[in-house]
Image (cartoon, rainbow, N blue to C red; front, side, top):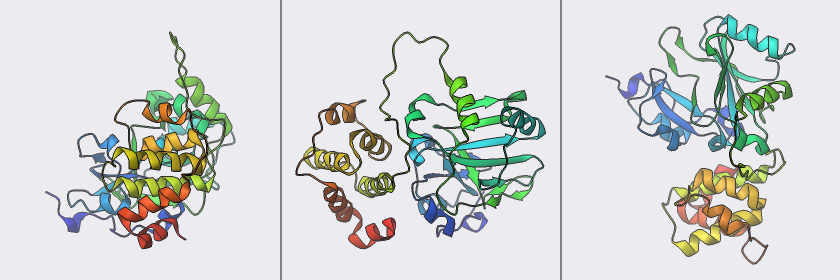
Length: 289
């Protein structure tokens, strides 16, 4: 049995979390999520840390956390394989953490938005010990408990925008994810841009606050959709809306936004709805205004 005193994760988000406000989390026990359908249940840091049954917290990889991927190096053979792919790889300037076991660490990188739809979690190298983690996976973060070493430790916690995944590794991963045979073309919603625009992350934060109030009436929901499109454009808005508010029918945002034209509904509409759910003070604090 676990009780609250056994959970080493503080309820208050650590200072580094302010640099990655788009990250979403999941409570873990013994390195593994214990909730049903945890992949589809993103938590804030506070909500994930509140589970007395947890002894750690995991980062949800992929679009749900703004396009973060975790590169998991699990032993010397994985490290050797990584260096074969990218001889100049090093951890200088990277965000990374470790269990404390030799040649074992994970590093977090930002993935260019236009590739999000093309990727999946992929295991490479001897025994699949080098893992490119994406949607549907999680990575246990410090100060979570580790069953053998005691706790996960930061090598370098986030202190600013995440570095992009190096081009050499991005190319390797994309090639590995290409389907062998594709009977029908795959439609991609992603534009050819890198998601470094702070407005996108402001939108994700506002939509996440709105989602706490439950499903909106259709007319209100539609106003939020148009407001999101005014804020970052229809393609990025679609991604943010799917990641935060979800879809009742697949492709509904695409259907609505493909005919989008700027009008009277603006980004202020999204702000207003967020304030109705969370209050203006919490919205301002979330956005660090």
